[in-house]
Every structure is written in structure tokens, then in C-alpha cells.
Image 1 (cartoon, rainbow, N blue to C red):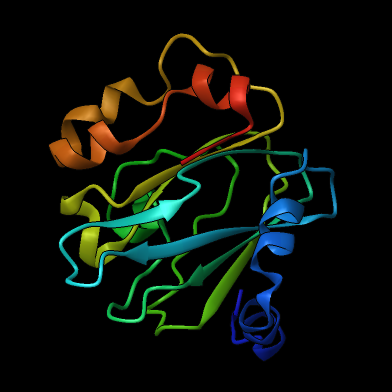
Image 2 (image 1 turned 180 degrees about the vertical axis):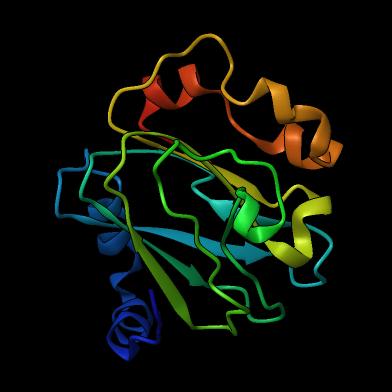
Length: 173
């Protein structure tokens, strides 16, 4: 798990390939495909987000978080005891923490254990900058990790998309 800055992606976007890239990222995911989650925010920093914030992938797929926010640093950090948070990733899955990503930097994780993964941005968790990834099939009920809900900031808990919604749409903004 290393930070990677890929200047080819910036070149593609600046050359007007953004629409092409966005189209490619929204097709149904297959094992081996890399999927991007953008980290972004408003120009004045009053609102921050992961996009998509809900995502359905297959075991073996890689997710790459890219900081597209020109005015903020962000992290992608799993909810798990290794990050001093309640476990909100499947048993047997390894947690992650990207460290601070400067604008244009990225971080990737390959997901192999099926289940529901909740994650957050360390400096922006209280602002609701959270996301959920479902790897493989998942049960829509009961709500996952309900026993740890009280340990999350209210904005973080409200920002997590529902499992049923992600399963229905495959990706959610």
C-alpha cells in the first residue's frame, strides 16, 4: 500500500479525457479492474466528500483514492482497531491508512475479503467525509456494524450510504 502520483491521469483529464475516464469508471466492475474514488471539496473547504461514497466491487479488485481537492489534504482510513476506531470491516480483512494525501496524490487497496468496509477521512470525519465499499455479495439487513454506530460522530454515521442502496445502484455519490 503505497502512495502513487500518476501524472498520466492528470494529463488525460487536462486533455479533455475527463468524460471518457468517468464513463470508464462507472461500468460494472469486474475482478482485476481498478476503480477510482475521488476525494474532493468545495473551493472554500466548507464541504468535503468521497465520490462515489458507496461502491460495489468484486473480490480481487483494487480501489484507488485520488485527492482531486486543490485546497485540502485528505486520508482514506478504515474503521478498525489498528486505526483506534471500532471495527467496521469484515473479520479477517486488513485495515488501511493512507497517511495524508496532498492534491494529486493517490493511494490504492486491493480488496480480497468479501463484506462491507466503512472508511473515513481522518481530518474530516466529523464533517461526514465517509464512505462504504461492498466487496462481493452482502446482506442488506440487518444494518452492518449497528453495534458500533454510537461510537461514530453523528455526521459520519449519517453520511454512510445504505447497503441496499449500494447493492441496487452499484455506486452512489
